[in-house]
Picture (cartoon, rainbow, N blue to C red):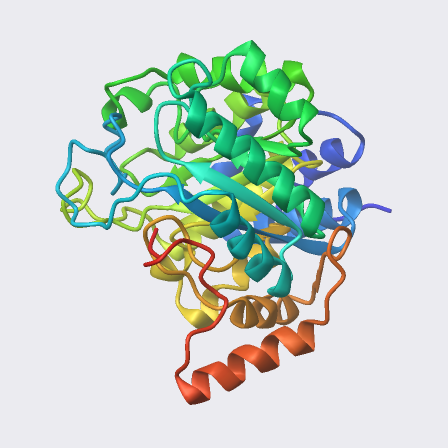
Length: 368
């Protein structure tokens, strides 16, 4: 079957993707210059051809908050910036399990244990490392969830242990293009991030690595980041949009991106990564109006991060399910079979009574 969007550049790229060809940097730059409508149509075609017709939901827990020595200019958890967030040490296995059970009840398929620091070191902090391992085992054994982790830089030994413990995806975002990365981070390099992804992949873990849009990067930077991820080889591409936190260097700048640019980038990413989940993650609620949030899903996205983020609140999993439905898609239930109507009803009831719900998968208190 031949798909046509009436845009020659988009149609040519789409035909090649459907034939199994990998698009390159030149293709990505040409696509980014096209109107959003044909790109969104093409992104949806690619998702339907290479995907399973579902939207995969993941959820995370901020397992250790603040006091990170790195200086990522977007991050509220850096010790370099005065952002006023609540800080705490590693939560411990039981609290991690509580968060995982909330995520399971909310329909998540995978659960990520996140620690914001340069790296959870088996050698330098053996007690914390052991708590991480115990947490992974507890969630793995007691929940119908895939267990993921985002623990910073890894050694080969640490990666092998995590793989043996059953970590499904290792998350380590590249944030932006190699060119723009030094404008955002000084304390480590783009190459440092790539090296950890390669170590994790070599150990046998799938990779979840993506970007933050709206940090002042150009459309070309967005393409360059996607090409770098092609070279690394990922199965999940999280697309964050900057949600500026007061006290960080990027706060005054604000998010420099429009709804059209978000949708266009999602579609181009799907064409560049046809077999990966393109996942809508942090900042989408802050940058897209409620009536716009289905648009990236209609443009090829097939994953969501549901519930709260690391230091900012997300929207309810019930709302996320409604957005999936509005986009004409279905939630994934491969790991965790759940009843979407039960989840939506629980959050509808909670909203009416103004009681706390299980949407928070962070700690006490919850933030991103």
